[in-house]
Image 1 (cartoon, rainbow, N blue to C red):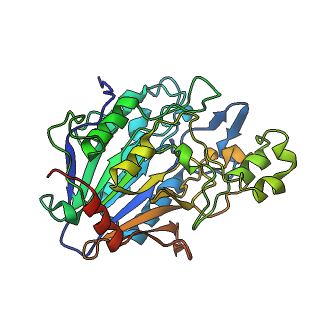
Image 2: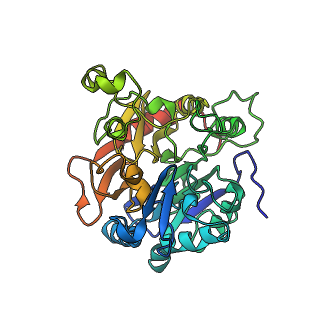
Length: 389
């Protein structure tokens, strides 16, 4: 039995790596995997006959293998919707385990550590509850072993006693489908936001009920599934924001905007995202902490852009799925790019961080590489932050 605690786990997990110049993390997102024995997939009013369709879940596994061999990461972060609860029947209450094992077996064989944060479909109409998926952290090679909540922190580096030579990942449950369609999704729990403020040193010392503020690492990033409201209408620096065009094709853009798409694009309102209508305040906490250089999410399959706001880079992963949900069961047409993953690389010598997209079988995508932390910026943040070691 798993109990979901609405707070950040105060245990910091550390992933030890061999001596090297760079720490490399691979983000995989929105695989929407389920067993190849599944004959049909139903979403709303649409049912796909998988035996007579263009979709092939076995390609999901092959894509993972190819990306691992292309990138040789030190850690893989699975940022939600890795499995899809809608594909499992009531008698498959443990189906999540076999589906997840198919995804992580290539990592286990390559001795690559991994971790996971949930999306809105991992337990969507599933024969299991969301908290039962915490059992994922008990699967082999998981960097979050024995963690009791989705919201926690992992460091990765040569030496856990030298925070400046480590990357810290703040991992969050960004919510699931809201019972109120006007809100779209639930969001970060307020207690978790408060815990982040405390552990990161956002709060004044007298307000901080923790005895120790977590030491600042050489680079710190936040990873979750559903994009934040701050992603909305932010201009892309690199990559694609194709969600509006996908929604237009699927017939889900409301009137009158569906009739004047060129005007919508002219005024920049096509840069939409699938976020909750509730603003949890987590982004403003990231800004106040002066610790987070970038955030990484998934969810919006037709977006893979990097934007910037208030000094924080807001990054989408690249969808990595050959399952029906990848293009909304065909309603949204073809994806504007090939399936792939996002790489994040931290240079131990100069503390810079770069990120780029890797296509399955095609390598680094031209024009996708961007620096999201320079040595100068990292140094300035250290000077401004009040960190208790």
